[in-house]
Image 1: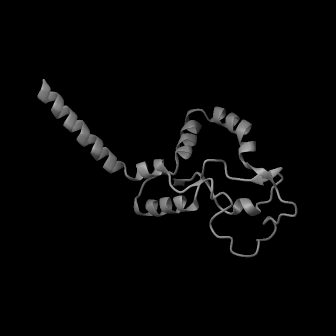
Image 2 (image 1 turned 90 degrees about the vertical axis):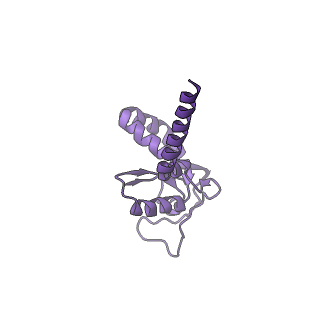
Image 3 (image 1 turned 120 degrees about the vertical axis):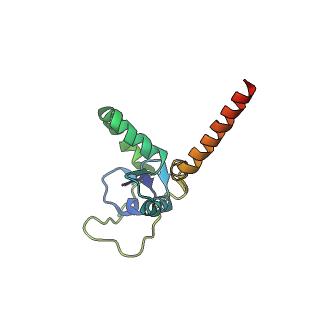
Length: 149
């Protein structure tokens, strides 16, 4: 299971909405390539679950610890967080009853705000190197401590 963060995909450009402002993914927003790299990595590295992005990990942990509290927080904050700061364009087409014509690519309107990488995901995919480095530092520290005693 690859747990995803908010992604800058074109779905927000054509989704049917009754929101007063243009819909958006709840920030922080990541580029679709971040998700693609995680999925490819997951295909080659069998793990039960992979979280992409610190907000994803935080949401999963909060839901395990106190789901009711998280639900109340999201109910209070996410109505506004799901809307950009500009109104929905009049006459905007949507894909509720039929697909929109054309190739819309992989990116939505939020390229300027979207992150091209996730430090949390990088740390998770390199954790064996990080653990080995931490072990080497710990061993060197222990050796120095013993030498000074």
